[in-house]
Image (tube, rainbow, N blue to C red; front, side, top):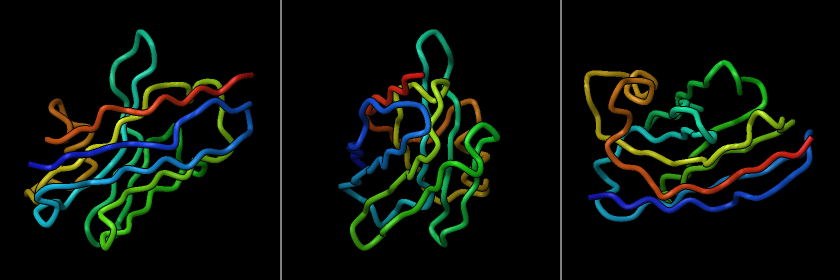
Length: 128
């Protein structure tokens, strides 16, 4: 089992920045994929970014160029640096993790089941 705890959410004006963190505990040595997805009120889950163990990253079209995903495996911590935030970025942000498989991490994150492990989420609110 892997447990994930997000932090760093908050309320910022449009154009502002936030940095989300996600600490993983448990059988973290088995984790290959980590990533972020979000859910806005009344909408479904939207993949935001994923990162492989080797550091290769993928991003959703809505955040590419504004968000940066990174990881510190020595601390079992995942980060999401969010710059130039827009009101449409307002959502609950969730951290996810999964094992090594035959699929790339982005394909898993955007697939019907998403990642195996998920945190409880941290709220991001961007005002216009």
